[in-house]
Image (cartoon, rainbow, N blue to C red; front, side, top):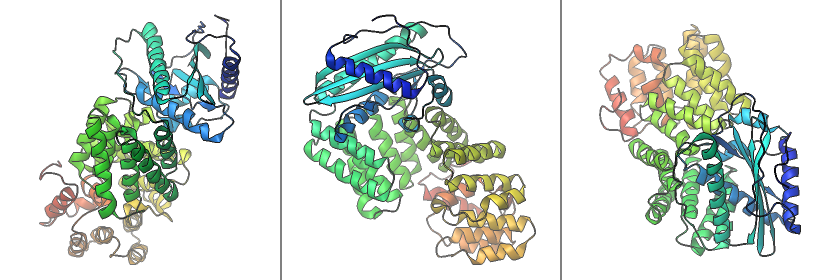
Length: 512
């Protein structure tokens, strides 16, 4: 039946409604394929309808192995919508966090700052796939239209459904908002359904960010490209998985790094306009600390796919490393807009406020990170630095006590020692210093010696490191201004700055 009111009070009710629609397609009842269910209602407080959240599609199939269809179609739709200029498409990571929460459509809209919500179901039966989709107005709390598809199961079918849904969503927003954009032309990525399945399962494993998950993802992506050597998303997945294996310390960089790079460039060779391939190479170059190459690749990814949340997030971090604090803040804000429930994105926003000297906002965002992920110790680290920079030393001490931040070496411990020095407690500062292994983090040891007034020893320790990691690079160029003010006129300070720049492959004088 057309034009019936369909107020949806919660995401669980939405799932029930979509399930009902999906089941009706199995019996051949209304609505017909392509039929639009239109609703009108009085609108309440404004959310931007151009901000779109695609909720995870519900798998109605009895077989668990059919999950790949729901996940794959969900991923593909987000990817294609992210390429449309004028749309803000909420990241998959943020919408996954709202699965089965029971929140109402307006609540979801407010939490994600999205005025349009897409929901759907997927069911496979034999060689057929049946899918439903709804577009929800998050302000009016009604669904605007519904679609159903009943097709033969094949990669071509999945691509056609995703393309048609993208077209329908954009048309709906064009009619209300006057968007005048041509849709990017999508591409059928593979004709091999098993390769598609392997790639989707690989992404699901990679999302776990565990050693076993990442290793399994490598295997699945390798199987996918073996079945279809021209399958770009699988090459991108393989590059990402190998890069993360290196980044997380699960494998040898000398062996896996070249393989990751080769996989990324193979994807780019097959599709020069692949935003995912450019972003993957951006992540790779950032991991091996080639700042300029990383930023170039991420810029290209964002140019192709403006709503690519991960690319904006990675861009903010590598821009900070590359000395572009103001640009990093712009990227970080955009990343959080696209992925508001990502602890990593909000953490990078906190860092960007730190590097821009806005410690109050950095602390606020660090607190937000802890709400999203209580065990995220990087947030405590950033809070501690913020309090230290603001000379709120007692609060810095509280934030930094009993934390370790693996990626920063012994940076948290060194910052705690600096705090003890600022509190005129040299005894405690030296106790912390004695616990810092110079073979593990000589730069951290040098920082503490600077704070203690032992300048020559500080430079000896810091300059004993030929290649700086990420935390020393950030520290030299953005943080601990009080410490550097005491040594910036020393003849060796410029060498310290040059070494930090060289460690990120930056041209001489890149930092201001």
